[in-house]
Length: 153
Image 1 (cartoon, helix red, strand yellow):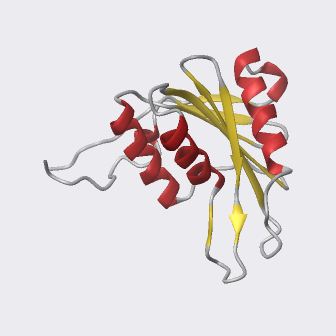
Image 2 (tube, one colour):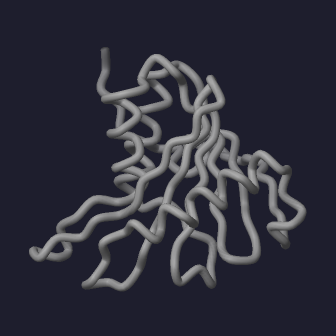
């Protein structure tokens, strides 16, 4: 039987039109790009998350000499959250990159880790994917990876 999957998302053709809280998160993610270690790809990614308490945490991607091994900014951020702030749910996450000529979308592994994190914390995470000039926002990572990996419980 054929089925259909649809979702809505927000699109902003200018970062200047983002709500102030979302713009702040994008700015924090952009700052995190400066902490990236990407000597092999030259692609620096930053992620920032606003927790329920209002606290903002951020992280950047880290490459390894055994490239392509390394960790994405989103994975580094989520690992930090899990080890230090797991009782303070993530409400929103912004992802951006340098160069930032296109929106920065999570890779497949990060999409799955985001799904896992939503399940663990019991609530969705808004994801802001930004370039230097524009942004798209989804209300849950499930919209980025509707057919995610699940273990039967």
